[in-house]
Length: 116
Image: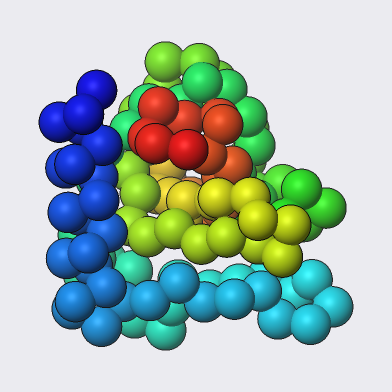
């Protein structure tokens, strides 16, 4: 557990060191983006869903992009805390039969195995 947490902290530090930063939610609950960088060029860290929605921003009131289910793989790039102090991860989720599609958005830390 300590090793996994240390690796997660190192990954976040590395992402922040390369200029990727968590973007605070804009006024009026508009969708928060991936920090202004190219999402495809990000360093993604694997985590597992415990079940829960991926949202357009890092608040429970934001629209749902897609629902995840327990045991599915997700990859997170960076995290942010919302005004309530809750930790959220910006994730990439691949779904679809035949032709997979990537979905991007925010998931609450309690819905993934990454540290909360």
